[in-house]
Length: 494
Image (cartoon, rainbow, N blue to C red; front, side, top):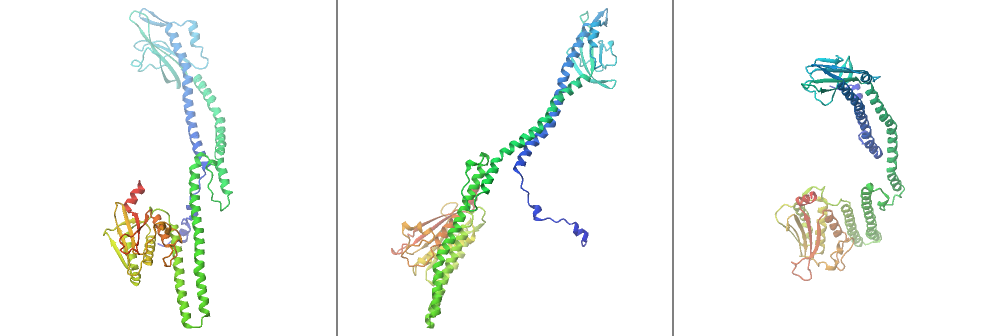
């Protein structure tokens, strides 16, 4: 059924701004967590105060009721088999001394027969619960709540006559005393609680003042100031955050330095080929002989290829450096498949030289975590380097196998002139080239290889090829050890 205009107007429209979570105030968070328990505990405090006040108010009046029972017990007389209550004037005055609450008393015999006092007091179901210790209960008389004290009294007479004495009073004085206690405790809280809130607010403001100072110091920095923040200037609780921020600044500094170095290296390395291209173009314009012009143009094409390769190498280096270290977030890939495809791509160039390019596999499909594009770039540079330095009819072998559990080893072996032992670590530096080889190159290939290897948490080593039979060409062996995908996952979990 088509929607009407009214239906369309009523449809909710959600913008990205509405979905953006709002930043929460640290000051407000702490204040909420401090004041919320205080405000929740305050009603509980009032309830507990009320119960305590009731208990305190009952204690002295309960003792007075007990004293009244003792007064009545002393006034009991046994004449024959009858129990009688004879109150002297002094006892009557004591019993009637309560000028606020109404007092009731009652004396009952063993079988609940009435002896003296007020008949209104209840005596039901007392026989099984009454003892010679004073007991208390609450009940109603004439619709008004009263407090009753009662106990059994044994009279000194033949036969050990027992009587039940009950004394009760209304609760006026008790409630009045309890209210006075509650007022004395609760009313000051109405003054103390706002003061406590103000003090908490002030203390919290003072407590986060160092954070505000730290924020002002960071805001006052120059845009190019990436120096670490002094941890001593931050509160102890914020020190881990400052340390983490300093690590971020350090990483950012390294990134900026890499970018600056890349720009400087690119500018330096491109200056020479661009100048050569310009010279070749100007020379081609001045030449009159077609053959000389053609030779100059061919040289121009060769220089263009070299400049293009240098640009590609620089871009590959930048791409490798910008990848995050570690393959944790990278997918599983088949290293055997990557090696087979890359070696197959280089076969025509190897045949053109010619150089025997071989591939040796264990037959097992090795999986690692990594970036396939970077691994292809790494292997391309190793094979290109091997083919460049291997003489005609030489051998280049790419080998993939597993020696140790959890480790996949990739080797690229050639029968070239080799690298002296004192230069084997230097060849991985940018733009470093072994002198006397007579081979053109940018000096970036092995630097790119090392960068990609490090990004995959692998290890690269350089050795002499021991299988070469010609002493003039000892050859070179590059060995890279990758952690298997399963072993890398176990290492990350540990």
